[in-house]
Length: 579
Image 1 (cartoon, rainbow, N blue to C red):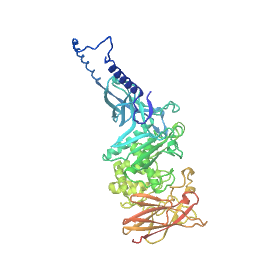
Image 2: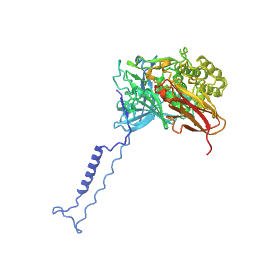
Image 3: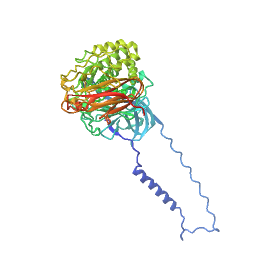
Image 4: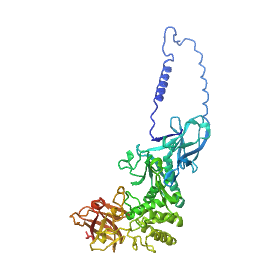
């Protein structure tokens, strides 16, 4: 039975028994000094100067030589974990197999838990160390790896981010061979034992993704990544320290990425859902090597806001490329047996287009199959500098710029999914797109619709953009909410003829019921999409623009809050007066 535990490094206090032994030794030394015959009495007179000299005392015998330290011995073996395959949305426990714990930190510790030596497992989970003989030791494997110089670890968000580890039973160091195994904890009908394999399954999925990328780009430098998993992690809003993580998701903070992973049995566990974990790693990839302008939030395959549709489709398609599987599979429910799966290279989805994440997933995956992951990786790096918001249009433009030979391939895939783009590079804006995603709401002015993708703005000329709630039209599940759906955002483009400071005036239009639209603005500034909620006084935003295209988006907060069906916002750009 291997021990599974959460391990926190701490400075070890001096054991009490050591202090007692030290004090006892000190006392013994003092007693020996006092018993040396320094006092006198009548029975043992001290000889005077006339007395006969005493014979010389013999020299003390030399102490025996210290025993040589025990010769070091070699110890080797393997570290493995239980892998449970996910087939078509359900975990198949009957096909559980032992897989190597790769590139992980392995320690040999003594009976007090002190590390005697440390090494790293290889791609087969093997290790080999040298250590003193005649020791009682255990193997300890930490759920952390090194990704080209960057640490990646799995911790428990419900226990102060303690690092996961698994230990073997104790054994003699002279054994020669010793293995350590992390078990799934599944006992036939439930998780009745420690789920020690889960952190290592998560870590191995991420390790696979890193390896695939490093094979293409050996110089790639990853940002630090922390993976948070707990058996208490559930799909609920609240405090992650209590396990309320909403869902498996990626959240960047300053200098470090975080992926939270569901783990509540019989509800939704994702440790063995490699598609799900790689999807979130795909968002980490965007944050590290590319750019992601998505607002995030709940979603399904309903028509989505343009940048969200691309981001989620990208994650699904990339998962197939990395894991070399032709589907996206997610397990959940009782016995983790009632999930769902999506084919990445099968029949077209029933609904296609630039606002559908499933369409984009198939495009990304099939492009990887035909043009190679290397072509996609280079395009994604170029996407970081697009003057448009990140979308399938900007991505296809980056593909053409990076690999002109892939132009026909990407165009064929786009056309199959009812997406129209320019065959010439240089159009990341979807200028020729005619697919409005089916957004047609009676009584809503034509400007409320999504065509063109970017509504043009002209200097000193008022313009109006509208935000609509498409949930009733598309019968969107209320649990998925209203924000971040098709029609919520109105994208706009302004072409600055010269660099300098500009004023963007924004004002909500009064509706027929007397209420006024509440503008929310986002602007692409210095390579990042910045949000202004609400727009602060005096009603305009100063923008320092370079010559060329500038993009922004508008929405009505009352629409995304579900209070009204539609709201419009007036905008105008002027040159800022010189100071």
